[in-house]
Image (cartoon, rainbow over all chains, first blue to last red; front, side, top):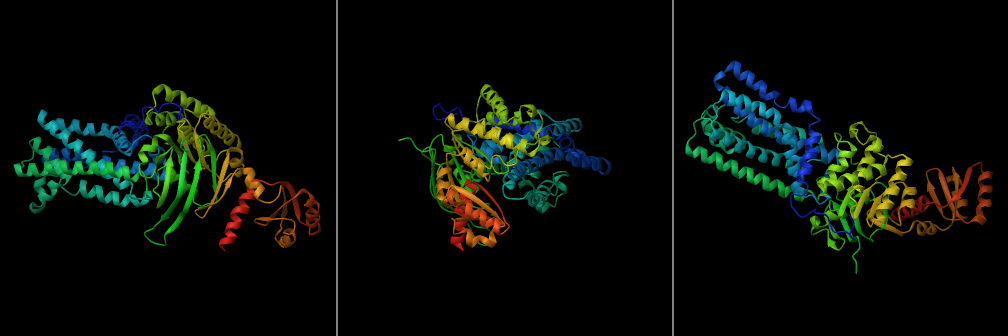
Length: 256
Length: 309
């Protein structure tokens, strides 16, 4: 390309190059076969514990395992984005190009999601086997998982940009993903959580989303108020995180 | 009037750390690059070269100053100029789990090029960089030099109107470096403009039509390699090692450039014999050669260091 020839069809769309970058990231991720295969080991171990110790809770743990698996994709996105930026400096290649920072963020996120979706489908198959999902319940589950992914990808990407050293990220990452993904009622029913803290659990995208999916599957009773609280919170937190991440991606593409 | 490829005016950058004093990385750098020009930015480690390159390529915000790329304001609206740019980052590495062919091809596709264009440009760039034989090997299996060549191949395949190359040939063997030089010359023949940094002064001399020398965040000199060499004050260099003990006597023959234990005297052909005799008298080693860019660089930067102290 030079200035005598017309500019190619680049920079015309906010999402130019998105598909190509998704493909790039997917190709990169698929080389990590072992990491992908073992990505649901913790969830599987939880399922075994619950199956042995309290079989009645297995449907809750299954739904929670699916939600948690999608949630931890954010951690992988965070690590990948940080690795590309800190170790490879490849983000400079993409930022100083027609590809927008938003397309970079989304491409990286969707690429990682596609690579890790296989093991999640195994959990989904198990859930379908143990829980009688109606079409409506399946739709709710898909919507919850989509929101979960957008939220976690956005937060994971933003966290990745706050550090200059990979090792500094790990403790914060562990704290964040365990605090949101393990501690609240994701793997266990909302009813086992302290009553006074249940509204807080419904406000969290992880436990709130899980509760909505469990309610749709008919295994967790929720009042209309609780459904509204969890739904609104999920939509607002997902929207805010996504808009925040796109804004942040744009801002961080030129360091201060 | 056709706007310059790059115009930077009074660019300043101060890094304000959370702890410790603020660091003035650039203290008002102004420079211009015409279209289809190859220009090198030279300086010691920490002189401000990378900071300037990152600001000019929209990757870092300046504290103050103006940067225009092909007449567009790169500070106020970085996204408007990014389609014109391509960058080889310092110490950048390709995706370890992509092959050089995949790396270049997918990057071109991400920049919005068609499959056909991406494919043909990828093959051309791989050939130019001598990567054809390893084009289908994962980057993780390549040597450091081959990975660097992959980065350069990826970026030159864009044929972007303005390329910023931060130490593009680091870690490459002499043959690979010359292939890179040829590819840069081809790019400027096609109309691209190149700003590069390098610590290889032979590279800067062989490749650049103009040079800037930067130190401690300010520009010290600008001109062609010949201009710089002429400014040293002679055409020949006599290197005396170890020369510090006779430095005062050597200074009577012309300007000195110190390089560790070696003292280079820049002088005229008529004084060579006297210097060689002095060296022989003192049992010192002496060699004669033409003034190189290295002496010019050492003299310009050394003078600046002396001025500061």
